[in-house]
Length: 261
Length: 337
Image (cartoon, rainbow over all chains, first blue to last red):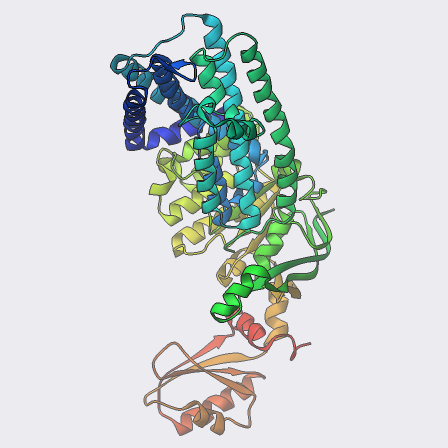
């Protein structure tokens, strides 16, 4: 049943072709822009904070490509379904609403990974100097880490989405969340580039589990034991975030109001 | 055994009211005024298997709220609910497998994908066997004549087409209990008739219990032998449709069309001695008189009116259900206790 939902999501994504093509373009432009920006910042320097130019370019490219996978709009969808009262229809279906939403997110993510990131990566690889690791283990760790980052990001999205039950209107919150994730997850800037005090704070937040960890693993910025502890950190966040989601969901169900008749 | 068994069901909503003016708006930021609104007020309702029950009332009378509690979407504030032997809210996932729901005003099909993809997904959701799906759904699709619509995305269907697909989607798992919330809203006569025929058929064939809310009284006349009338969250009538017609209004309705404009006061004056109520008819210079009493009174009223004013047309009607319901709404329960 959940697999069927994946399939449906694929169909839905395919229903809007323009979105698909423009998506590839936007990601490529973003990566290009950051590439030239970092070129300028590095100037003649060999490395900054232990990352070389090539590593940095790879970091940016892989961070964006990973984003295509973990990023989804289910927070906005949940909010919309609540605002339009569509959640009523979801409640008469014999499935777990949050589970279904997660599955839809995964469908969206897989679609983007296969049809966006893979071809996009080829283009980027041809255009910019990027180093891919030859080691199978790095790829393996990267994919495990990517799955965790999907889970953490989806959990945060679910949390933001469920909050609509209480706020009834939370577009602002969703936007804020998106900026916070882009900034604190290490998508725009590797965490190691932040001032130390900021790094200390971020160590206590789940955001770096989303982008920084998988990207660092892929660029081999993490080595040896660091990889394991990073993966462990991601796993811990996955478990911790289940708690507030369940609490909020149970409360939300109890005080659900269906808007619009 | 009762399919629906409800005692003392109640639902309260807190509704916020905004204060007036800019100062009020700032105060609203800190504390808010709210009033508790009782949408459903201590309802008792028992429905047996195979019954077709119309659940009617004005807008805001609490119909949809009741349905939402019976389907497990909303939590009741108080009261006991047993539907299909389960607690709809607590045992939601198991419970919703035994019901079908159609909301006339919102779609439960997926907007961007073809109808048959929605069906296929629902088939998986309800874990139906291919066998069941093929035999049962084939029939439903045939009776509702939606075969040619199956490969179209839902957003491209007309309302009537969509509604038939919605109905098919709600019946995919052949539930013993069907909730219909305004299923014929905005549909043309032909589609309405098709839907009614279909509902009657599944009721006959599978003994499906049907609870429907509607504003279209012809739906009720065509389908339901039992009517539950709701007003301000309370049940004010529960019984047969015929009994409703017999008990609430005796007498007939006479529709006059005058040659010249006539004022209501004039008419009231000349028929003052009879138990008559005048109301403007839809036609120009037309007036409707609801006469309570036997045929004798009716003919007297007619002769009095005709001797005072020249008329171009006159019609004698049985009071329609619509009229009765309108009377009930307007006068409430006071007059008839």
